[in-house]
Image (cartoon, rainbow, N blue to C red):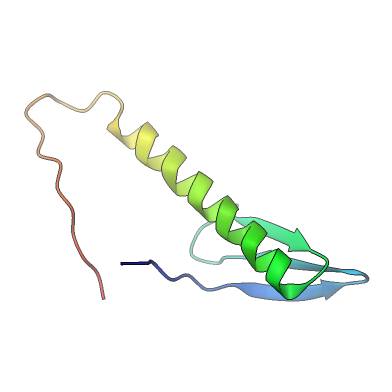
Length: 71
């Protein structure tokens, strides 16, 4: 199952800049809309992986790790 996020794209002279309002700090850029969206997707993935790693650090041994589906 793929997650979907909002991508806001704006033209900045010769470039497109993109950001995701759901993931603060997730930004991308590219010479085309497709490049900017791909760059944004990579940024979102890195941020989410980093946040997961940080949140699991120091977790009690008896904590239950499971998944939940949304939407």
